[in-house]
Image (cartoon, rainbow, N blue to C red):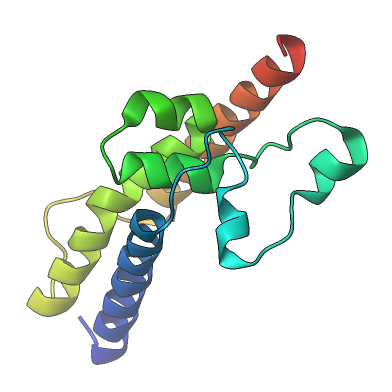
Length: 136
């Protein structure tokens, strides 16, 4: 692997681990959303304007629950966010190992795999959102 690729993998792995670290520092909001406000961010604009949660509402809360091993609470907060957090738990170390070793560990590679995983997270998130809208 070229040094620039190794650096990029290491940087991305550290950024993702940083996201998990922040999630561990935050206290999950009991409402199932709003945890991001502990970072000084405003309430969800979508929810403020329309009175319903947006597709990403609860993702930070889901991450905060996931890093604590509270998977049921994480799924209730946001199923797509839970899947994304679980992916990051496995992908971040993989990125760092690949950067250190200079070669890719046994794992699927390529853009098709990345697009497929991203598509799965988006579909789960939208199904979760539609479910919330229909049965709130």
